[in-house]
Length: 384
Image 1 (cartoon, rainbow, N blue to C red):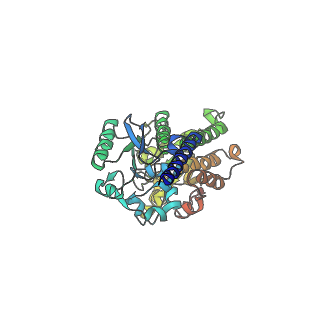
Image 2: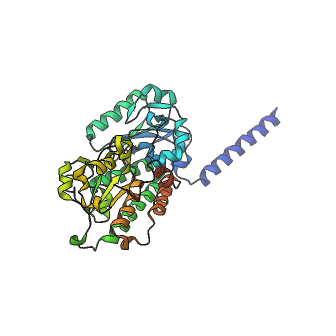
Image 3: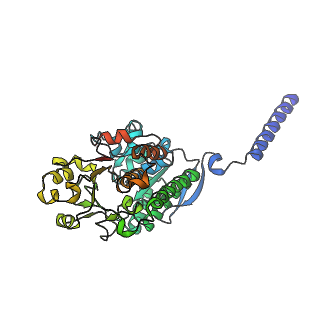
């Protein structure tokens, strides 16, 4: 009996020593290495202190564009539930990330309606380790904080919230980058977040450097119409701060109307008479081809110089469940190639687009995306 007890004691002591040795030799960060039940605190994009589980093994994403950021950060495998836009059968799908991961996302349980109209009971039933929640720039910080706090209270699950941001101006770009960093920090993907930010900044620098020395008097004038915004729109729908125009130093004839999406008077477009017209081909979803149909049938628009001289081109829609930044960047190279071909002589816009799509969403989806719009993206649109 004594011998058995001694053997048992030796075994237990040996196991304990091996365990201690393993702990001492293990120097990996806490986020990669914590035991079940460990947590840490992070500060989200609205200054809320949130307790998150470590390691983070499952999440859901609430709000426009939230799941897109998760794909950018190569963490889509953590998603265990989606809102209803990811489960719809859509004739036209303008979101590159959804083209790549559509089958996987459609198979997941429902967390509620799109645009952040969550169903707390459904989320509780799924039981994710964390909820990410994005907001738009049009909603106040106080309202976003209240929404995040309410969802956290109703579900008992931590909510990490942040503004989605944009690339239209410095303030909104900072919000976007901060959102990526908050999500990256929460996921333990800080390195990938910085990689995405650096890629965006380097791409913007490349675009701007190609045309920065063109005198203002020699810059081409342009207008982008039919811009998608919560659906397809006609010719008067535009972006006064259209990023591709900003980056390649085009003269946006609609500039000066703020940074948000705007509808102009058709008469103003006739008066501006830009040298080039770019049409968001998402407009084709409208009856009579939207902006394209208007250019073909409206006598006043047919008098535009760009129409008469066949300088009407298609760009891909980027406002589809918030901004698809990879499409914004791809559009910019096409716009630059059309306006200043000698400055973009080394660029094939379709190849560049696939390089960009592969970096952000993992696959070259330009052809699949463009085919939904009759291949009129990155092409001259025949009017007449």
